[in-house]
Image (tube, rainbow over all chains, first blue to last red):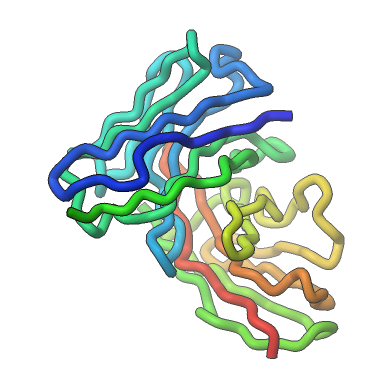
Length: 122
Length: 108
């Protein structure tokens, strides 16, 4: 059974860089079958796609975050990571790591981590 | 980039009733790329429907999806107590993903 686990600081100061890592178990990122990515949800609000990465390092970013965003992959550790620079209070959210698989041939986010809360505050 | 608008924002119904949730896209979307998720408080979203109308593994048949073009619908035929949650529609296109703002289904 595939499991995703987010890790990283729960508190980040304004203007600093938010860094999170997702550890994948029960599957190998190197298999090349899936894309891996990040979703966030501000308190009381809807879901926002952040970006995705393939095992080769190919990335796709939300245009609204692209200038501040880096998603990377470490296949040796079976992990992928998120870095979001110059954070503000608007970046406070629950951050989920996800797997983009398919269901009946349709692309879907079929595996989710439990989520980690990141608060931006001084 | 197509924007998804879900309605209503909140739907108040009683167990046993039928729920109809709408997701409207600002541009035509391939049905293959529309999905629905259920999210309960404190939990990650769970996939319900893919390709606009295909139930994911383990999803009860009281959940159904339909639609094409710009208008998509999630229907819950007879609400069970565990169905009261937030529902999100999602589209995939050109390797980008967007979500609607969600519909909260609450007990009346």
